[in-house]
Image (cartoon, rainbow, N blue to C red):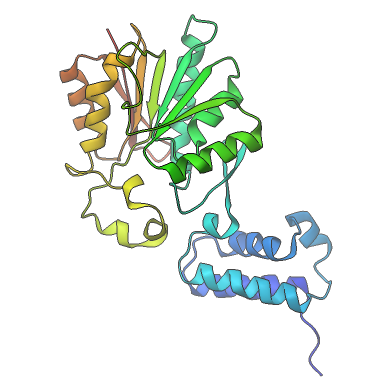
Length: 285
């Protein structure tokens, strides 16, 4: 008679399936999926590894694993993604927060700390899940936090995250700076806009297949939205206030040139941990 499968055995099965499907982190993803299927965290899975997996746990784990084998992002399957120190709800309505964006957050925090005003006004353009502005508000509660997005579905997700985290952020619907009057000005504007070229083959591979195209791709070989922000943000920055932009690994030179042409000063690009020029910063004169 075949012995019932334990949680340890089920974990190994999930890992092997994910490895065969091409996962870069089959062990980690197997633990996450089994945790979601059983309601147990990693330490509990270890402690109870010899427990027999129930039929419902096996069925749930199989369903989740099939979704991952089909290529669905692990963040969408779990409905969550860790970013900085936050645990954020995510959905197909918005971009999945990525580790490289933490460089943008680091530099934004430094810019907030350099601001002489007690309550700096900070604006996040194209907020998506709210990852950037919520992290900044969590790290620097004194800021007046504002964020925009053109997508009502993305804004619903961002507001839900803000409510769950108990963070006070003003969310406005509209493309980039469209919701603001000419006199509305900020101590810092930050954005991680779409910057992939519409014909980039990566859009048809991996997790990108499941994310909203409008949050990924931009015209002018991926530079269109970056240029729009650069050209319009100066009107909404206070004197000496910075604009911080995340962009593609090969776009720094073009972004710097556009900023300099528009009249920003102290324009510079910074490299991410992989060595790519990932963000560019410039200040209003």
